[in-house]
Image 1 (cartoon, one colour):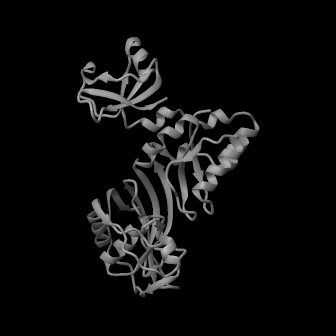
Image 2 (cartoon, rainbow, N blue to C red):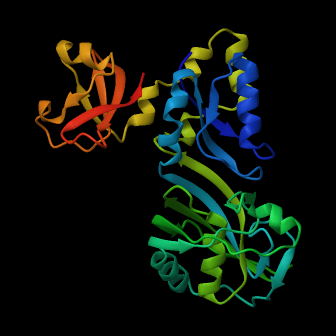
Image 3 (cartoon, one colour):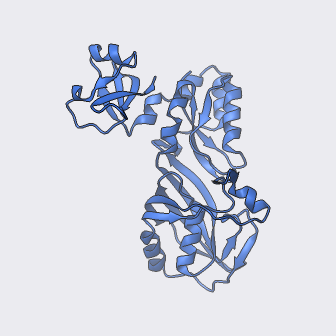
Length: 301
């Protein structure tokens, strides 16, 4: 079996837990996920099986979309709802909506982010969370990310019990974006400590919530010998790549991994390019790094 299973990861599981369960259900070793989700975050987690593991790297690089909630008035060690409280400032009322919306809009575009200490980013061979658990401070690398949209999706709510304000949001962003940090940085712009109080990933690459099934649903399909209904073609992971339909002559060369002259293709192509023959994905080809004017196989399927 080869293809993509758009899995809905439930809270409390790690992404590797999901991979382990799929391997066990399908009795397959070649299984990989396409982008880690924190255990407390649920949402879309495309699982690649068989030959589709070759496209994991492209799914990792893909855009993502999330729905979440920001809590204004409290900051935590982990920047989410599961860490110890670091700072708390009482809010007396809800802030002006136009101020919130304007500052969220200002955060769209290219941003520089410092990853949270409680994250899996490596510094000198160790994960940041390993330093954090020992109370050690290290210089964290600055990341450049793209925020395509960051909008409030509901009315702010004032919580009299702890004098905080929360509101829901949706964000579309590039890979590597820390939504926790986005919430914290928005709080700083508003002049208050903040954290991300809830998060769900609703899209990864072209896969959306509506495409997904849970592990329980996958188990039912396996039990009824209908597992193929859960597997999407590998091609769905390459929707963003330009597509070229090969002639039978070129197919004979591509299927053997031959070098080709770029001039064989009239169009102005953006490489790498997906080559198809009779509707089937054959290979991804890229420009040759050393031989100008030639293209070579990047991935063979």
